[in-house]
Length: 148
Image (cartoon, rainbow, N blue to C red; front, side, top):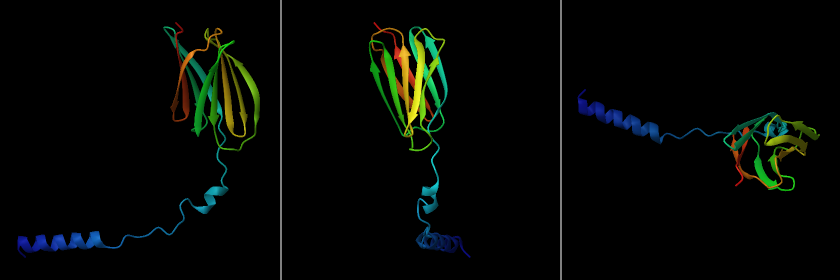
């Protein structure tokens, strides 16, 4: 067999393989049994605060990825509110207040209603702080900048 004949046979084999019908997936996507499984409820597993040169970072380790994160700030007294949306399910948890040994963030109040976690950070002062909130998979970080 010549090199040219081998090339032609190889090309025909490749074309034939690429034109072959593709197998079809006959299973429903997502599978019907998936709807019968309960999603794990959203919960806060850990809270930590880090401070440097007037900037503060508050980290929340979550039990799962949140569906949505929204935030707002309040004044008199200064506070930061977070709403972490999770799947409906799990039992509702009453508000719990955790005192922190930090000069800026005095306490964290948390509760869960209808799968959504509500967090309020009690911060120093009466003026609303400058805040940015960052979602990082199953972590949420709240950053604050110094007041001017």
